[in-house]
Image (cartoon, rainbow, N blue to C red):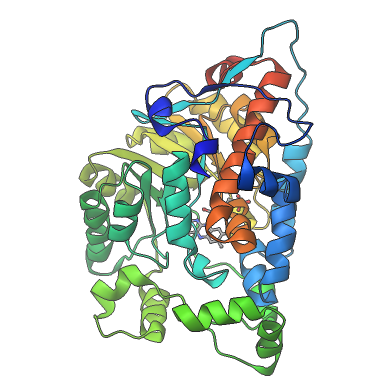
Length: 414
Ligand SMILES: Cc1cc2nc3c(=O)[nH]c(=O)nc-3n(C[C@H](O)[C@H](O)[C@H](O)COP(=O)(O)O)c2cc1C
């Protein structure tokens, strides 16, 4: 699988330039297993379909769903689809360079894995598997505060691409928040991403309807649901239910899965204010980003506090149903602060065209959440590799078709 990407050494040396292959025919230049997966699942949407078939409805809905009536979720997709790009022709596009430098480090392509909490509900082991896949693909992997694996483990699995996302734990003057951040620093995280767009927990209608509780308690309905997805049921039996691993240090080593869930529910709530952001910025020596901003004035505020970057995001349509599409907010924020800070966007990224749209709207990179989870839900360990390959291949084609031979050129094109 790894052999199908340009080598990591090449990417590090900034030589991620590869010929644009004749993608429409045959294997697209891939060998063996990768070529087979490409034929069977040529798009991320194909992986989504397979992931849905293999998982119980409450688990799939938890991942795929949005807040309220899924309006913001739909807005992300509609806004991306509405962006047309007029190609420039007569240029030599035989070689296209997808590499990108973010906060002083080189990555193979301008996309990464967004932070996702409780992803283990979709399939056990997904956090570690995606961290490994990101390390192989050499793209950023952002570990969520409420992941089902530990900071220390991901630091070891993905040393070149590990970023850490923080949700605050306000009690005791944020003692736990600062401890989590110190652990991330010790584990080698290259960037800290502080999420601001959860001032309160949101009402995810699908989860309410499905009776989703953590830890999961079987009811007649959910038992029938699991019976439809026996492989998922077996995987859960083997691995046990997903736990908020990083909170064992605070809830007590003996804490059960239920104790950990109630610790997170009770303590990881309350304000993450600009004052706390300023303190975290002071405490963190490496790249510092805030995530979830949509308003240019908030972006201005973040820049005034010395952030290195902003993740323009509406949380994948999972927080505030009236929020604008993040790609639209990106354009406004780029116009205001784009020359003074680095911008990353997420929300609805499903193919290489979406990535190109993000670059053309002022982003240095775009992150994807669900796309990677669908890959793992569909294919297991090799799913993350396959999603990374699809994004990279499609981005390469989109760059070439639009007339940009590199990420930098795409960003510079008005
Ligand atoms: C299952 C799931 C869990 C998430 N958990 C977190 C989280 O713990 N922290 C965070 O900052 N964002 C979280 N997000 C939001 C993602 O980081 C990202 O903003 C969003 O998924 C991007 O949209 P996409 O899924 O359409 O690519 C989560 C998203 C999903 C789908």
